[in-house]
Length: 481
Image 1: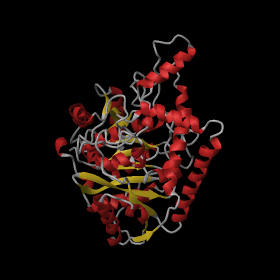
Image 2: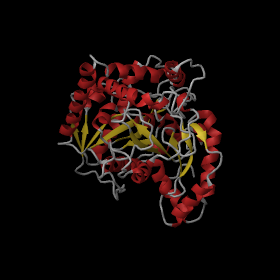
Image 3: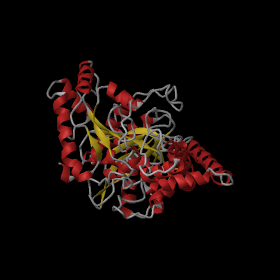
Image 4: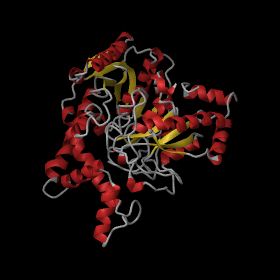
């Protein structure tokens, strides 16, 4: 049962071969049993909500495909009455009075929330080692990271603690964990999914998405999350979209762009070989492989680590120890209250990015750094626009390396470089996904597919066609069978 698709689980429920309570109970038990091994979840619902189960049953009776399917939410989606910590001591006891729009939409479809997934604090990290609630361990090797910041969501799906999880992606935080954990993950176009109720890191980059076993599962859940939300000024009125699973696997006429400079730069031969094999498969199926250039992509990491910290320093200024969040018990005056509350509540990585961002926005440095980074962002977006004049989709590596060992990148800077293939598409606001394409040295490897703005259909369809002929996404780590 734990390796069945959402469509297969729905069929079991519709045919009454299993009840919603039984299905959710199976996964709830797995969450409780395997969280010790992975630390993938910050909180697990003590018991299934009667109101949630009733709504799920009503949606199931109405024929809703997602009804009764369990999931977990990344712990920066506000969930009414359930702790939303953002992986931080700053919000360790925060229980929101409302649900994020994405949470509301999935609940309306009858999906059942089993808990909240661990994450890098305030989504700042690429390893899930920066959580106040402990590191998350990769289900394929407990000595290695699952990727970040949606590492808890990725690990939970890879260990089949749940069939699907929500995540967020600012510079690769869905795609890199999906690649490291051997599952499928999609970041939609910026503006496709409402950010209302999603605690902000970098508002012009953050986007909610999905991590699941297959592209089809991702498409089904993402469809339900999409749509215009008047509560979010960045939510586009044309954002409603419905996933249409391809009826055949024909790739004739498809133009796949490949930035071969990225592949040539790979130092890990295993990743290079798997990436090349996946692209060769597309060619064998009738797709045209076209070499493309993204000349400003090498500047993406530098630009991102000016823009994202600048936005985070602004967004996190609201956590002052007065209105909500952690408040120190050792303040002799108002200034000390601010300083000590923030010093005690935030972790080291968050503090570092706040400092960088405040500096980049300060007088004398704004033009030299922040404004220049915005210009680089525009150049990168234009590079993609030019590339998409001759191709339909872009295929590239997700990460330049395999999942690294816990504590291996304590310096931080080398960890930032791990996102060099994912950040460019984020800066351009494009839809992109990661899908598993095999294993090397016993660890999963992912391929990134990038589409035109609002073309989630095309990249999901290509991934779905690939997964019809390959079972890499179906593999489960031995310890979790």
